[in-house]
Every structure is written in structure tokens, then in C-alpha cells.
Amino acid sequence: MDVKIAPREAYGRALVELGRENEDIVVLDADVAKASMTVLFKEAFPDRFFDLGIAESDIMATGAGFAVAGKIPFVNAYANFLLGNGWEQLRLSICYAGQNVKVVGHNIGASSAKDGPTHLPLEDIALARVIPGLTVLEPADAIEMKKAVRAVAAHAGPVYMRVGRMPTPLVTREDDPFVLGRANILRPGRDVTIVACGCMAAKALSAAAELAARGLEAEVVNLHTIKPLDEETLLASARKTRAVVTAEEHSTRAGMGSAVAEFLAGRCPVPVRMVGSRDIFGICASYEDIQEFFGMTAAKIVEEAEKACSMRDI
Image (cartoon, rainbow, N blue to C red; front, side, top):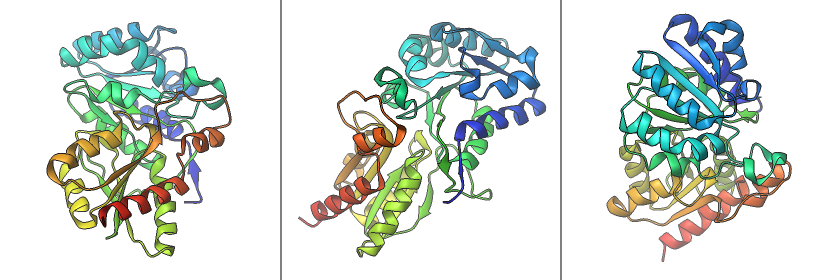
């Protein structure tokens, strides 16, 4: 995990590759092309790039219009504004209408850092996963991001994908399979299951190494697709370990961890502990300090894993 690459860089380059292969790919941006790295697509295909300015509701509706015309639109903006301002259009114009729009939220989690609490999207998974028919995903690293872009484009239907801004350790390999709705086991284990998405997958692996030194073998599940859940993989792992921890760069209220807990409550009721932000807004600080503030750390995953195991044994 020594090499770090920003997922947004992989996203921008993957869009260009896809654009060369498919002339139906169009990219819409809300005045953040440099931050979202869609500027690469703009430079390669200026006739298929559209900057709508800071108008997230408009960009959602325009994306729906492109889909009606037979195009495959990738709609890009900062996740907090895209889902916050454009939610009604996402729900009705895209999802209710069943339009083939790919909605991409940038600067996710704590990554906007010093831009302050207004720019920290810690609720976007919750806003997205409640909408019927919307696939929701967050790739773990740059390698997986490139695969995800292709999978998202090939998928028939609306998608919401989170794209990380900060350089993230590479935890997957080029030859690892990537299928929407199918989780990957990054590390097998028998004592506790750690389910992670996005940048938290790397922290989960670090936590697993520390837990191993303490005599606990953790199974690390990369849940890149949050909706639909890979129920089969989650159920098999939970039945084996009987203790689960979830880790996400998002609120623990109605996020990925909630989705996992909701499923397991009905099929395999085991202790589930969650790592993520709590019922609070963020702060203005460095990326690392904000993650520490929220407890989005490997040390916190270790702490919650030990708690989950102790609860199992009651």
C-alpha cells in the first residue's frame, strides 16, 4: 500500500479512454472540471463536454435529457451540492423516469477539508440509496475506479458513484474482478468481519494487520457497491465471524454501515459496530485532522472490532 493515487485522476483518464471507444459518452460538469478531472475529457472531446455552471438541479435535468436522446451522460459536481441541490431531479427526472444517467459526486467525505463543513458531503450515500432503482457505489482505489467507470457506462440504468479527491493507497490489483453488486474479499479471516468502501478499505487492511498482532484474524470485505448489496458475501462472512465492523467516509446514519446492519438484522443478527462520522457537522481543518475528528482511522476500526468481538461473546 505504498503507492498512492487520487481516484479522481483515474476517473478522469478512464473517461477519456471510454470516450475514444464510444461516441455516445458525454460529460456534464458544474464548473468544477479541474477538481473533478473532467477537464481531461474536455480537452480530448470539446464537442461532447458541457459546463452548465454552478447549477446542480439543471445539470441533473440536462443529463436526463441527454439520456432521452440516446446518449450516456456522466453528470459531475461536488457531491454535497449535487445530491443536496439536485435530489428532486435525481429522484424524478432520472430515477423515476428510468433514465440511463451516471451521476458522479466529487470531493466526498472529508476531502474538501479546509473548505469547511458546508463542503463535506457526509450524507450523500443516504440520500442516494433511498431512491428506488439507483445503483450506488464507491470504488476503493484508482485501479478499481478505472474498472468502475467502464462498468457504470455498461450498466443500463441510473447510477450514483462517489469519487475520492485525495491520494489513496492501492489495495486492489489489475486482475481483480470488478462486478457491480459483487463485493471482493481483500483479506480472509475468521474472527471479525470488516466491511469497508472507498478509502476506508486501506484503513481496514491496516486495522486487520494490527488485529492480527493482537490475535484476531479479520476478514476485510471491499463493498464497492453499496446498492445493491452483495448479500451472499456479507451473509457468508457474518455467519463465519459472528462480529461485524463497517467503515466508511460518510455518516454512520443511513450510510453503508446502516445498509449492512439492516440486512444482517433480518438474516444473521450479529453485533455490528460502525466507523464513520456521527450525528454532527464537520470542521475546517486538514484532511487528516478531520478524519481523526470523525474517527475515520485504522485505530478506530481496531477499537470497534474488539468491541464487536466482546459483544459476540456475551
